[in-house]
Image (cartoon, rainbow, N blue to C red; front, side):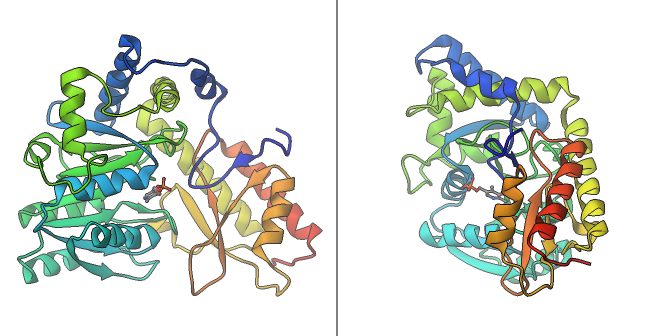
Amino acid sequence: MTSATPILLTPGPLTTSQRTRSAMLTDWGSWDDGFNALTASVCGRLLAIANGTGSHVCVPLQGSGTFAVEAAIGTFVPRDGKVLVLVNGAYGKRLAKICAAMGHDHTVYETADDVPTTPEAVDGLLAADRAITHVGLIHCETSTGILNPLPEIAAVVARHGRGLIVDAMSSFGALPIDAGTVPFEALIAASGKCLEGVPGMGFVIAKADALAKAEGNSPSLALDLHDQHVYMRRTGQWRFTPPTHVVAALHEALLQYEDEGGLPARHAKYARNCEVLIRGMERLGLRSFLPARIQAPIIVTFHAPADPKYRFADFYAAVRERGFILYPGKLTQVETFRVGCIGHVESADMERAVEAVADAFRALSITTL
Ligand SMILES: *Cc1c(COP(=O)(O)O)cnc(C)c1O
């Protein structure tokens, strides 16, 4: 890799394989049977990853991940519904903003950036407010890398007879989510995260009966998942121009995902990447923000060096010159930066990334130990 094609250690877009990128060299027509078969194959494979075949449907949607989150809120929450939004980072805050933009009554329960939401807290909140119809949860909050206890919270929400909408954008495909045992109405992810496709489409794994009941809810035409699903089931086609190259790349990425051993293998690869990264950075004197117990192997937040000469922009540029793209921190109280563990990268790449970081700090005369 030259510095012109750096390795992306970010929450997406990610480094993809040559094979995935090559799948984008064909121009597909949206009426073409071959392309419709590709879409159907992608949806079937995504459902299988969630163990939702039969009970759930997969509704793909054009756009970045946020479009699919907005579509899910608009489609599943009735206009007179109320959403409890569980927040411990930027993506939770965005979910609340989406509720506000769509004109939905909502209430926010916020914990600190390093405190997972507990099922006990959700239990209390739902018992206290009968008006809440839906709960919005971020599985892995990518703004820090914290993991929220999805199965436990899902069980509480189901016990209260409310609907759960999960933003599993940065966890889907890498962390196990079993639709057979974890009750949810909608679970949202996208092409360009742990499945290692390219960005450009989101998808929602929806409980079939919940989606059937959602007809007419959406205040948006383009983001109406019920409409998208009904049209696709009838015609095999997307309602509006499909992101053909993105679908083709995701299909190829899913074939590789399966060849490599599916979710357990993807999880193991990222866990190794995460471990190598944290250990390596520790050797340089850089501490991770989250304790290991609540750290998902997706992205790691590190405290910036205390050296007053440290500036993220200079550090970023120096690491970029050495072949890696890092990500700024998203915390307001403490100076941090983030390093992703996901994408078509392996532990050897993470070792080299740690060396690049060490070398960058040396070049900038910044002490970390
Ligand atoms: C990436 C991500 C999204 C979607 O962000 P986009 O920029 O719209 O793709 C949503 N939620 C989480 C938790 C994410 O990691």
